[in-house]
Every structure is written in C-alpha cells, then in structure tokens.
Length: 343
Figure 1 (cartoon, rainbow, N blue to C red):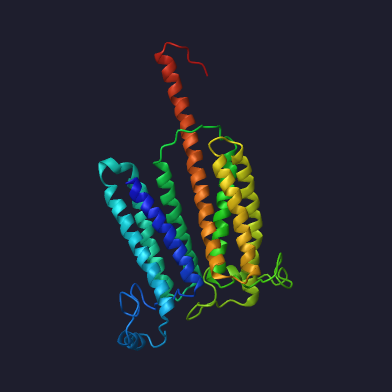
Figure 2: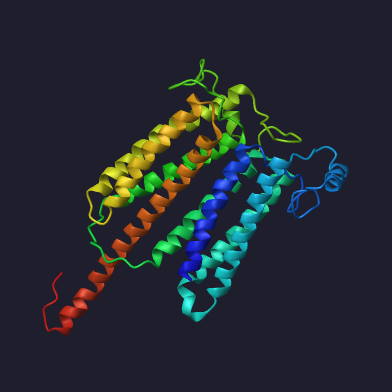
C-alpha cells in the first residue's frame, strides 16, 4: 500500500508539471471538448480525422502540438485517478485501515479535480476555475506525500519542538497564499505585465486596481490570453512579487529555526536553499521574458517547497505525538516498577 502511495505521489508530481507545461504553451484549449479531443479519444492524426475535427469544431482550428500537450496531461491525470481509486478500494481491507480516510478523501479530491478540469475547458479557461484546478493538484500532491511520510519508519532524535508550531503555521499559510497568487497570475496572463526589476514599470501603486482580484472577473466568451486591462494585470503581478518577499522572509526564518534542531536540520537547509532558488527563478522569468523551461521550473519549485513544508509538518506532528506518548506512559511504568509518581 505504501508503494502504491509512492507511485501515486510521483505520478501526481508529473501531472502537476504537465499541467504547468500545458498552461504555459497555451494548450489549455488545445482540445475544445472534454474528455476527448475533437470527438476522438486521441489527437486526430490522419487527413480524414483533421477534416472531421474541422467539421465538428469550425470555430476551434486544430493545432496538433497544443492538442497533444493537452491529451498527454489528460492521460496522466486519468491514470492518477485510477491509481487513487485502487488505493481507496485497497484501504477498505482491514490490514490497510490506517490508509482508509486519507485514501477516501483523496478519491473525493480527484473527483472534484476532474470536474474542475472539465470546467476549465467548458468555461474557456475562466481564471477562477484555472486557479482552483492548480490548487487542487497541489492539495492532492501534498496529501499523498504526507500519507507516504506518515507510514515511514523514523528512528532519529526527537528534539523539543516548542515554539516552532506558530512559525510553521505562518510559513505554510504564507506559501499557500503565494501559490494562489502565482496561479492567479498565470490564469490571467499577467506574468509579463511587469518587465522591470525590482518594481513594476510606471506608477504601479497609483494604478492599483482591486478589481483584478474579483473571483469572476470580466464576463467573456473565452478567457484565453486574458481579458483584464494592463493596469489590472500589473496589479496582480506586483501583488505576487510583494507577497513573495514576505513569504521568503517567513520561510527563511523557519529554515533558520529548524536548522538548530536535530532531526529537522535537513528540512531547514532544504527549505532555505529552495527559497533562494525559487527567488532566482522568479527573477529569471522577468529578465529573460518568461522562457518556457524557467516558468515550468518556477511552478515545480513552488510544489517542491510545499512538499518540504508538508514533510516538516509531518515530522513536527510525529515529535509532538512521541512526547505525549512518553508523558502518558511514563507514570504507568513508574507505577508498575513501584516508584513514586510525582508531577
């Protein structure tokens, strides 16, 4: 069961990266229908199939490369859904009951994610749906990683973790909001709304538009390539940058605190290095005008940071449980040995 969980985790990571690749190559509507592609279960390949596709969807001309990117993403996501369904079925056995509720929650999340995938196409890339689809993928990824870590044996030191919980929760909340802002930036095609560093061009603060964060945004037949004004896109981009500075500061503080605790030093060092790398990728996106591989790596870096915090949270929870168990069982051992219980 743990092997199956690990396989599903790796597959989810691939699906998340493929989703970023699909979005950044403007292939989100590479297939105008769902779950097929121009009425087929594969990308139309022959001249006859191309003619049939044009007949079925005259307003959406077939672009083979974009359609291929979209279908590869769907095939991988479908395989992931079947894998999680298998996990849920296996968890009904008594031997795997510790996996039961997480596996059932994962199954519900996959169904929700499939619905969001369908709405992404049928609502023509509505930004709120696209961002929700991104966050759903990250949620499934982190839950699978937590489940895999939860059933992994640990025999290292168990230090005191007092004072870390507050910093960890703040870092996790800041990172989740930053990921959501990144998804909103990508969904509204605002990644290149600001091409200067360290600030956005012009009087960006004076042109701040709160309407840029409206969940539904401007009604449109299609949201491909964005429908917001330049000022609104610049507002989204600037918000993503500003919150990135705050998030980096909190994450580096957490990394420094973790580095002083045995059993957590590895997480601290990894988080610190990943934060610096993610900042460098963000700067490279602006300076190099959003090259595809850098943009995909930036998306993947956010996923890796979330996984690092997931692993940190699981380890902190394990340490707290160990301390509670020691406090619970210690008086019983003293009682059985004839000692005196003192508080």
